[in-house]
Length: 96
Length: 119
Length: 207
Image (cartoon, rainbow over all chains, first blue to last red; front, side, top):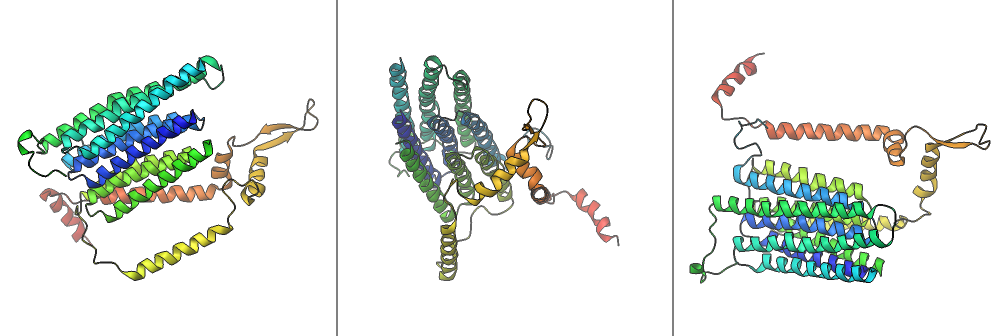
């Protein structure tokens, strides 16, 4: 069973490497944001599999938190790329 | 019983790996940003879904057969929550990304400009 | 088999870390470099999890991939988005870095192995901290002394907050000051508002 976990981890690491190549190549900034999103999701999966492999189910809390932070980070980066600031688009300037 | 769960979970894990790798290759080889979104979406839904399903089968197996402590049902529910969260946020993120790219002026490559070199 | 798999995964992770670092250093497009530092923090957090340190991994992810990326993006909005090209390969900094690195690596040869039970930290300090946690009370039922928890219940909290309390106080002050400084720098951008400039003038002229 641990062989299957090891193969899974190797495959996830390979996908991370591919996303990294896209993040360094990508001609537009949106390619990079996409690669960052994929990287975050793969990290969540990697942590879950590590938790199962080392018999520590506490890592799942960390994985859940990483998933949350990845999502909020991606939305913030996109908002910043598009508008140049983090404040609410409809609210007044500096209301954040 | 143990063997059945192990077999099913190994199948799910390997399947999830294959889809994750397919998505990774796709994000590298596809010609345009909007087609690369497909690659990202595949890993986040099918790849993540199958891997999490394999892990859930593992924890269900522990819960059903071993009667150990540390509540393996809690682990199963946590995995399910992570999976549901990934299902909801990843497609939303990809959709928001596509909208931001469109409103920024990025045009999807059509059949007409296939003679241009792609990166 | 289990350990060999973990070792292989750790080597692969560290290889990815090295690759990311090289790409960050060579990239001239600063926006992309900031996003790659987010990727670097995610990788670092995964590696720390493999080293059995989930609290450090959580801090690394929260600070590196969360706050640090935002702060650097906010700063990038105030400056250029491309770095100027480097003049070329200069040998003196390279030699200095290699010498310093070699000296540091040579210094680690004297350190005890990772997780060694004979290390001084495990022989002298840890039993002291453990003894601090527990006090033996003698009463009628337990003539040899019943162990009772005193003060802080958690070992790590007792080291951080009680034995090394001043250290923690200093760290909190430093981080607080750094946060205030960064906030002032990022919010202190003068607005293109003529009314604000006019209101600032009299206060500057006042003696």
